Every structure is written in C-alpha cells, then in structure tokens.
Length: 147
Ligand SMILES: [Zn+2]
Image (cartoon, rainbow, N blue to C red; front, side, top):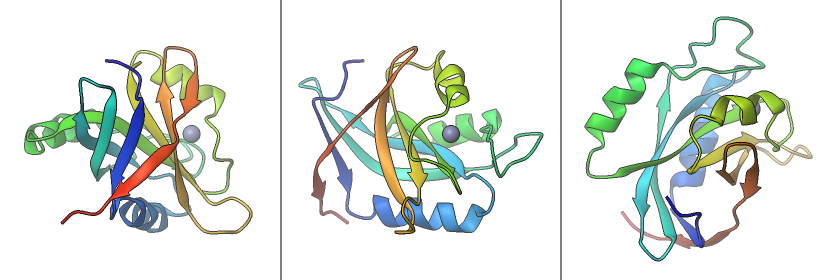
C-alpha cells in the first residue's frame, strides 16, 4: 500500500470514535477502520467498527483486538477495504506508545488512529500512517459529508 497523500473521513467518524471512547472508558477501546484506498494515494475512512478489547491485564492501559472478531468484521464489511485500526488512550497522550509501535510492526501500511482527550477538551481522534517502526501523523484534508 502507498502512504496516504490525502486522508478524508466520513462526517460521522469523529462522533463514532468519541462514542466508542466513552463507552469503554476507563478502559481502552479498540477496533478496525474500513474505507478505501485510491490509486492516487487518496485514502478515505468510511466507518469505525468497535471490537472487544481482550487484553488479559489492565485494560485501562492496554488493548488487544479479539482476532476472531476482526476477521468476522472484515467479512461483514466486505464492500470496504480494511484501511486501519484504532484504540483509545483514556488518560494518556495522543501519541503512540512504544508498545503501540512495536505491536503494530507486523501490520505496516495501515492507518492507526488514537483517540485521546488532551487538555480536557474531550476525546478526539488523531490519525497516523504506520510503517514498521514509525507512526507518521496524517492530516485530514477534509470531511466528506455523506449518508
Ligand atoms: Zn496506545
């Protein structure tokens, strides 16, 4: 996959990600992002699908996506491409942790979103493009109003 030249997201994506942050709080939420990747490098995220955080330890500080739920979601959303993943930092920074980057290492070439509330402003998604050892921030060019 090519790195995104421009990222657009559906108008309701922010609200959906905020809701998933709130529903899981104080635990981390996690899930998959579905959309499309254009040949010209234009990426679009249509929807976020929340998946169970099945981390075996403290879920306020870590997450693990239930693998069976992920494959079920990919089958169910087959009109879209799997374009990335998201999780929340309920009380943390909007930046990826060392663990985030290490665990996403085997999944380069995907968007990674972190939902975080910084400066008490409420939850907001931050988008990155993940390579094997680096998450580069991806600015959102515009919101597409659909649905
Ligand atoms: Zn994280």
